[in-house]
Length: 308
Image 1 (cartoon, helix red, strand yellow):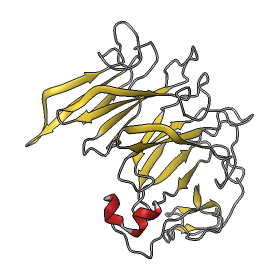
Image 2 (spheres, rainbow, N blue to C red):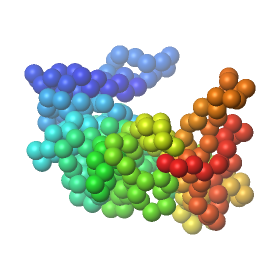
Image 3 (tube, one colour):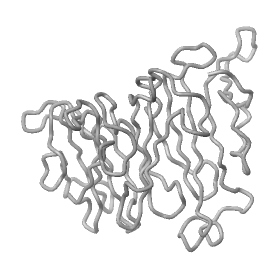
Image 4 (tube, rainbow, N blue to C red):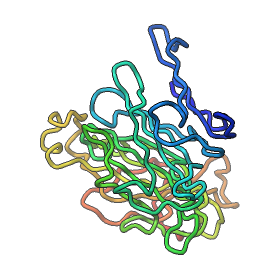
């Protein structure tokens, strides 16, 4: 179990942050072998600093296809090139004895990573690991909720780094915003797209999908009403033809990989409604036509389009 302590002081640096890792044994967790990680730990890239908040977000998963989980650690207050709170993510790699100080340090200034590290972007404020391309290597989604998109300050963004046998790679990194082609809605000031992230195989096709929180999304005139955008994962053609060759779960052939996105926004029942004990959900906007649509929503949802 990894436990973030983002407000921990390290060598006199307030809110530098730390992470405790407690290992499981027969019978449950055990204090023997507990590890305490900081940016001042030998071998870990970076340097502990006041306000870095190392450990503010955590995600675990096998990013290198070696059967051992890695630990991604968000550092949303990290200084990058002199820019306070530009943010970074440290990834500790797992080996047979547990986590090691073999690590990567990622930011929007890292080679191959899209975007520009800027003051108060908070890269690393949210993290999720999932296999978005169905190749058995975990991939890392990184929330950058205060990133500017065009002239929209604080609109928010999400970087996705893909895993391989050697671990995460900058090559092939994706940068998602609400202004990206195919994404529903549009980037607006202060909506903080990427504030929360969850990865799971919602579409049951063997590749994980990514839910992205947009807590300050305006919906039908409602300021800060909030929404969730869902990006659907896809499976490489070779894996689709022979699922076992990629080591992924076999799914029914009828559940093809969806290519659309969905944006969900919460709605309260109208004042005249008698269904006062229920909550109605509907799509904030309709997904565009695609070769395979996302799975149907539960009966408590409707897909009637509405304005942002």
